[in-house]
Length: 183
Image (tube, rainbow, N blue to C red):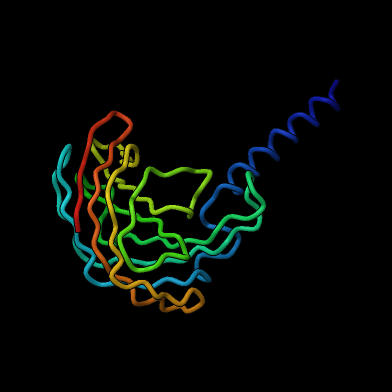
């Protein structure tokens, strides 16, 4: 019975490790190897359940295709575009993160609620903030658009460039509180 218990425990640990690291956005490459670039002029107005303004530097990072996804053997690559200027430990500070498919072209694209089984396949947005001392995610029932005026990044260059556009969306948190943002 001890050998069977040991096997079950090892199997549970292996499954936990696969789920934890297999679903991670970070991949196996160290963060320093992912091309990323700071972009000036990330601005947004947030209203609804919380009112705030976001302005400052944004960052663009390319996360390449994964070779060890759980549901499929290969996940598509995608870009993360987010603002960097906010300290989330303070009240009413926001981080707005967009996932942009790597095959995106300039134009208008619908923003949708994130689907963990289709990461990087659709245009998605997530807003993180701190309310009453606890982190809150706004990422459900998302509706809106992102307009890419320019989108011609070099996925291999440490200096991703030529990405700009506008966005507007409405999304909810788990409690059903709604925010809207445009920028």
